[in-house]
Image (cartoon, rainbow, N blue to C red; front, side, top):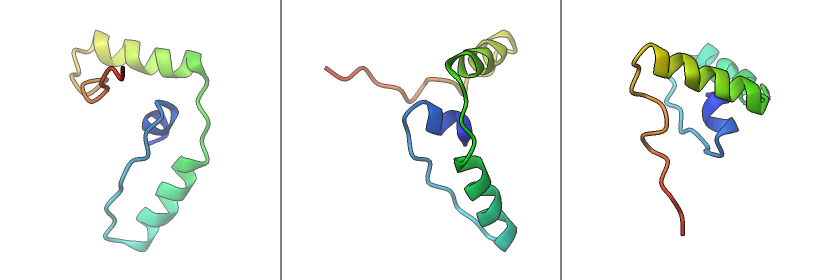
Length: 60
């Protein structure tokens, strides 16, 4: 969630337990640097994980 927030999105989180709300709130407080975001994306790419950037659209 912190990565998605760092990318400029506001994730919609479904929760079924009270501790999920606390976890989501804690994730919202995490601030990732540009270098950390780039490292996460590099790791995902190196592991061939297709969950990064597929939703980002070019806005003209």
